[in-house]
Every structure is written in C-alpha cells, then in structure tokens.
Length: 123
Image 1 (cartoon, rainbow, N blue to C red):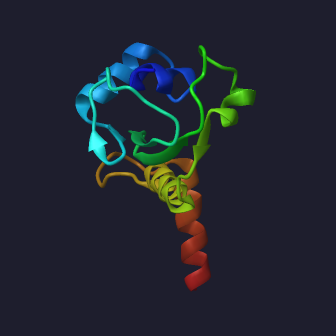
Image 2: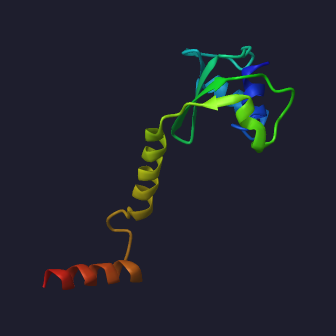
Image 3: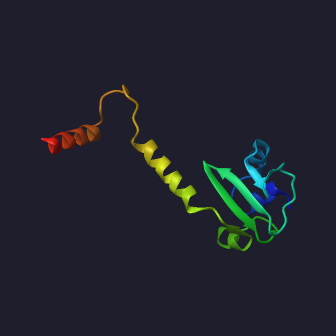
C-alpha cells in the first residue's frame, strides 16, 4: 500500500490529498528516509511524521484493506511516540495563551485584576 494511502487509512490525515502534500514537503520518513507519496509500506516498517509540531513515530503492524474506524486503528499500527513530544505541545499551548505583546492596548479586566492581586501581595 502507498504511504499516503496508509496514513489516510489509519486516520493520521483527514484526506489523501493532505497526506500526499505532507509527503511532498518531506514531513514523512519511512525507516529513516524521506519518501515520496508513492512509496510502498510493508509490515514492520517504521514511519516518522510531523503533524502540528509533534513528531509521531509508529510501526506498521498490518496493511488495512481500506480506511478503518478509530476503534480498530491499533490493529494496524503501534504508536511509539515518546511522551515528551506531547508535553512540549502542552507547554507551547500554554505559552501562546498567556502571551500578550507589549503595547497591544489597555489591559483586560482579568489582566487588571491579576495586576491588583500581585500588587496587594507585595504590600
């Protein structure tokens, strides 16, 4: 089975076009090599892919006949992604939520209350 079709079948990408585009951009590696979308995937191949700043690592267990439901995806692949990849994503999410550029206007009501609480703690 083609690598782009496999990644679509095991639900890493919503469409085959997205999987093909990711292959063309070099976001997908099979056994350590950057591959084209037409590269054949076999059982025991190791696939590394980058989606949303997370480097997923998976091992192919079997080839699905067609797109499978989310419940039975684990039959066809083993996810070996380290937990540190997901922790880094959480930290990135928190840093985006609380960052406000200097000079972007007046503080919000929540910001003002936080400033008041901080000042009252120091007094």
